[in-house]
Image (cartoon, rainbow, N blue to C red; front, top):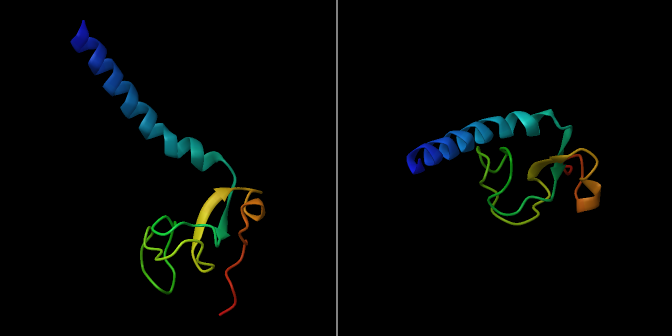
Length: 83
C-alpha cells in the first residue's frame, strides 16, 4: 500500500509539473524591463547570451515576463531604455 501511494504521488507530481508551463503560457503576459532580480532575467541582452545572467537587481536593460498589466505596478517599463 505504501509503495502504491508513493508511486501515485510521484506520478501526480510529474503530471502537474508537466502541465504547469502550459497553464502559465495561456495567461497573457508582457516583457517588463527593470524588474528582474540578479540572475532572474528571462532572456538575453547585449551584455550576455542567456536567461538568468543578469548581474544586478532591477537593471533597466534586463527583462522578465510578468502577467499582463502588472509591469507598471512593479515599477518597470514595457520598452527597453534608449541606447
